[in-house]
Length: 315
Image (cartoon, rainbow, N blue to C red; front, top):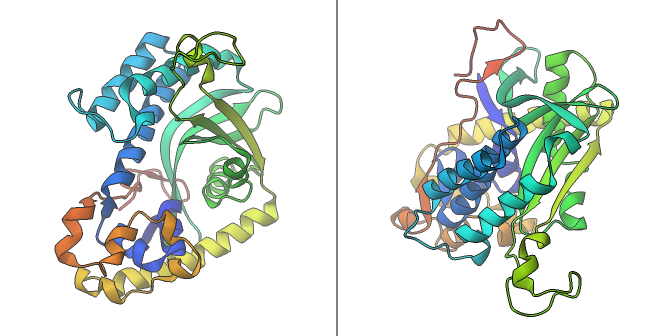
């Protein structure tokens, strides 16, 4: 049986060499891990928020999670990840995004569900949804994912219109509830440096330091998926999973990584790749600790298979 999630498929699809580094040798670039871990701190705090906890509890949870990433005596390299800046953003979210104002009601929080994409049950797709919600207007179940980014712009939001992760979440939610799930939510939080200078803000007519928190930006997006899109996603994901399984068996020794196909270079993906600096050194095993940290990504551990008996969990 081959277990996989969208992250694994995405990494292999973007570049085979990068996918092997991430999912066979369980490596992660140091800079990418910090950004991801701070994003996870927001995820943990947002769960408290949508469970109805008061602002002080939500912010305290965020600070606890943040301190696990960047200890109090340390400072991040990027200003936007500074402790005070990140806390202001979390506080502002609590103030302007009360649960009662949302067009949905939370039903389930960060549960890992899995189901086979093939008839034989050998290729099992797993989804770690941030939330499952019930739309207030239609009453339908919809997956929701929290996303942090440096800029909530049109280009960023457009990437989710056909995004494989949200398609996978819709597919597995439909399997779970045995009904068509045609829509999903993305809860976007912009993690950027809030202005705090003594210059006058042209919008609020006060000094930036006085209106700093009001510049925190959030947006809730809603996307559609047709049955045809979800079936095409299933067949494509199954094909990619089979390819990933073959590559994992072929490249079991890190010394073979320099010979893996670096097809990301042909898709102009290298500039976004977390392994680009190590790749420039031809994936030299002696340099791995200079650029990477060890981090196993197996979201299916302890997850629930929804297409088999309830007692069967991920391997």
